[in-house]
Structure formats: C-alpha cells, structure tokens
Image 1 (tube, rainbow, N blue to C red):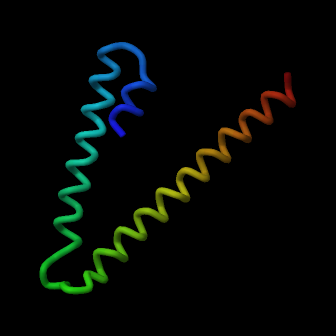
Image 2 (cartoon, rainbow, N blue to C red):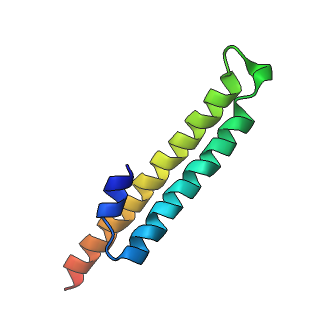
Image 3 (tube, helix red, strand yellow):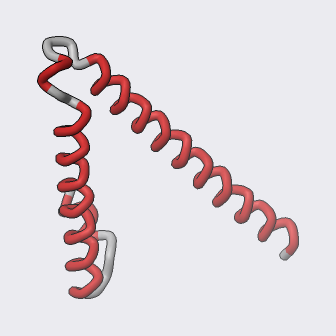
Length: 81
C-alpha cells in the first residue's frame, strides 16, 4: 500500500509526509487494537470485533458521503457553466 500512496503524490517532501502519515495511522490502529482486543474477552473477542466492524461501517459511510458531495459539486458546476 505504501507504493500506491507514494506514487499518487508529487515531490519528495509530499511523498515523505504521505508515508509518515500512513505509518502514523498504522501505529495508532495498532494501539487501538491492543485496547479493544483484550485478553479478558478471549476466545471470541466479541467486543473487539464489534468495535472494528463499527469503525469500518463509519469509514464506508464517510466515503459515500464524500463521494456524494464530490458528485454534487461536479453536477452543479456543469449545470451553472
């Protein structure tokens, strides 16, 4: 995934920042997983999986809202130009 991110930005500073951002987000996700997948909930880890599923659902909703907003902007620009 780092290759995809690094190839979609231009300039060495932007590439460095993008890779650092991705590594930072990965580290935060590692810390979150340590908090939600506790040993007390083993062997099923139901609370952890529910939390991760909720976060994935929130991400999907945000992507759909962002895509809808971009499409709305594109349609309105075409309509008024």
